[in-house]
Length: 310
Image 1 (spheres, one colour):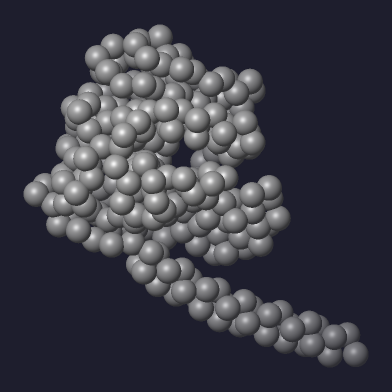
Image 2 (cartoon, one colour; image 1 turned 180 degrees about the horizontal axis):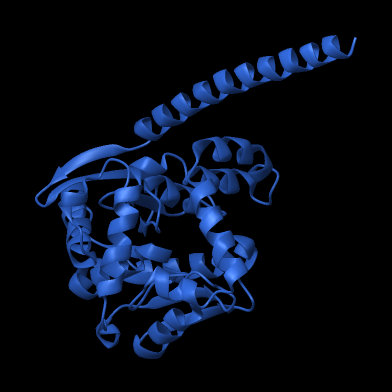
């Protein structure tokens, strides 16, 4: 009888595993198709770039973090309560379908954004940099000020950044945990298991979309590795030359991009406004969306002025 029970238990486990595997593979293929269908590729004078453009109103160019892709920009856009803007979400070089060779440096990426605007016949945008999207967003404001209505930094990198240096400040336990977390979160099977829980969070649709931006890490890794290399090369950006209204959101408890990055930009950019989230994490824009997003909408509307809609 004992042997029979083990046999039945083994059969149940095998059946469950087969069903899970089949379901997971089907889901993953659908996600691959969804990502490909949700964006367009366009050839600019500086090379190919992947983008998604939605909504109606003043244009907000959303520059995703590290890792990420155009889908992170879409996920961020869903946090806005009203669709009074149009959102131009891009995949930076090395992410998803934008070739790394197109524009490896933040400066080149900023020029690529301007070339994209040329192709889409967009005169001016507000540029919103999330986390690792910060350097190229800053460069866009510096290099293409005539096309930039405003600069927004969301937990953004504004100066020299080294993940290795930051990790050295962690306790041994936290360092090990972060290493394990980074490896686990890069597994699509983990994303598959996490999505049902994400949908239960506040602003569940946006939370689900944010979790999905970790999907297909193999198609984002080149961009991430390039970001880490480029960010370590940053010395001092001339932040005092940013000649556009600037809105900064950062949590004081952010242990991925330090609060000092926000303080530096706020102290040097002439028209900077800093929104401090006490004890807020790197995801403070989401955990405190009820106060962040209304303030951000108000800023973007002021910055937009006579910006054209599409």
